[in-house]
Image (cartoon, rainbow, N blue to C red; front, side, top):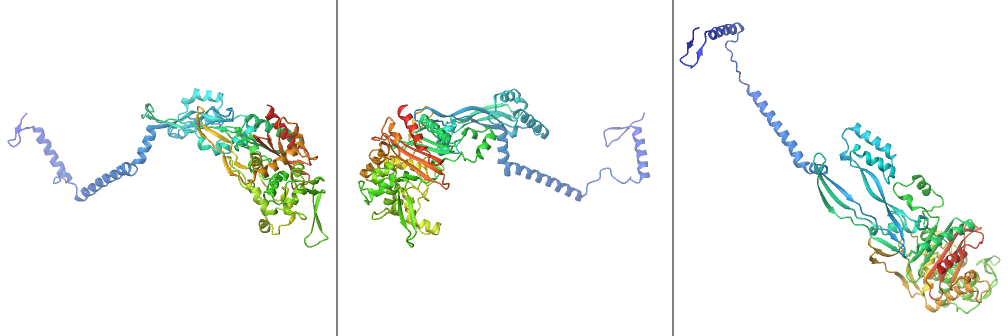
Length: 602
C-alpha cells in the first residue's frame, strides 16, 4: 500500500481516500452542485426573526413572572400560607344563667359536629362526590349535634374522608323551658340571651398549625387563649316562677281560656321575681340539630306562643286604673277622701244637643253613699265616673289630667325592662281622636277612660310597675331581670343597680289613702261588697285591686288583679291577667291567692 505525505498537512493520505474523493467530485459534477458549499450561511431576515422571537419569549416569561411575583404575589403567598398553615378554634363556653338562689337554669351540653376544610378535599370531582355521598349516607344530612352512634361510625372511618373533621362543641340547654322561655329566650336571639349577648358571648381561642407539603405537622403556635362568656344571676326566683306558671295553667284549664300573664316584682328594687306568659314554648327547639317538624309547628301556631304578652301584649286595664285615678283626684284636690258620692247603679248623661236622648253609664252594683276608700274596695264605677269625668256639681279630672297621672305611673311608655320587644302602650286623648277617628271627644270617652275602658291599652308589666310605685310610697322603678354579672367561678363582676324612672311625684299621704282603700278591698272594712275579700284568709296582710275589662266580644273579658304584700312593708307585687275569660268567672283572684299562699308559706 502506498502512502502520500502532504507537506502542508501533517497527516497521511491513504490511496483509497484519493480515489473516493475523485468519485465524489464526479458525482457532484453530474448533480450540478460542485460549486456549492456544504455550510450555507442563514439570511439576515431569518436571523432577525429568530432574534425577535427569542426576545418576545423572554418578555413573556418576564411578564408571567412579574404577574406571579408582584401583581398576584400576595394572593399566591396567602394561598400558600393557607395550605401551609391551618388555624383552629379552641373551644370556649357561653356564659350560663342562675336564678337568685344560685340554681342554674341554662347549661352548655357537650356536642359534636362534622366540619369540612375544602382545601383538603380531593381535586378529582368524582372522588369528592363519592366522599360526600358516603358522608350523607352515614349522617343522614345531620352535621350538627351528632348522635352517639353516628359519632362512633365517623370516628372509625374518618381517615377515609380527607378534609372532614369532628369538632367538639357545646349546645345550649334550657331546663324547664316552658316555665322560663319568655324570660331567657334562646341563643342570643330573644329574651335576656339577646339583651346580654355581649356579656354571655364566648371568645374562642386560636391555635395555628404549620404543615409540610405532605400534610405532616411541623409546629403548633397558640395565638390566643379561649375566654368563656360571663354568666348572669337573675332576680328571678325559679320556684316562684314555676308556681306562677302552674297556677296560671290550672286557671286556664278551669276557665277554658288560652292565654294568661303573671308578673311578680320586688317593689323595693324593681327586680323581676317572676314573669310568665302563656302559652310558652320550648326554647331548646332553636338549637342546632333540634326537631325541625316541632319547630315548624311552633312557628305556625295560631296561639303565638313566641309572643311575650307580659311586656308586649296591649290590653284595656279595667278597674286596675282606679288607684291611679284616686291618687290623681286627691293630688289635684278636686275631692277629699272622706266625701261621699251617692251611687244608685248608674249615671245618666243627657245628649248635649237633644235633651230627649240620655246616655247611661252603668255600675256593676248599687253601692249607696261611697267615699274614696270604699270606692276602691268595692270598685264602684259611679264614683270613678264622677271624679274622672265630672258629674252634677262634682268636678272631674278630665282627659288631660287623667293622661298626665297615668303617664306619671308609667303607662303609655316603655318600662325599660332588660328584655327585647317591649311595647309602649297608648293613652287616648281628645286631639288624637279628632285626628285619628275624625270625630270629637265626648264625655263618654272620659267616663270610659276613668274605669280603664275604651281606647286605652297598656302592658301587664306597666300595671305591675305602677302598683309597685303605689306599694313602695311613690318610686317608679325600671323593672330588671338581671341582678349581677359573674365570672366562671361565680365571683361578682358587676352589680346591676336598680334604675329609678321617677320618685316623689305623688304626695305620700295621698298614696297612703289609696293603699288603705286597696286594703279594705281585702278586709271588707266599711265595704260589704269588697272585691278581693277571698284574699283575707292568707297568712299575711295584703292589699289588692281587681279589674274586669270588656273586649270586642261581649261575652269575653280580660280578668285582672294586682296585689302587694305584706301590707305594712311590701316585698312582692303580683299582677295576674287572664285573657278572654268567658262571662264573669273568677279567674285572676283565685290564681293570685294560690301563688301568694305558696310564697308566704313555702
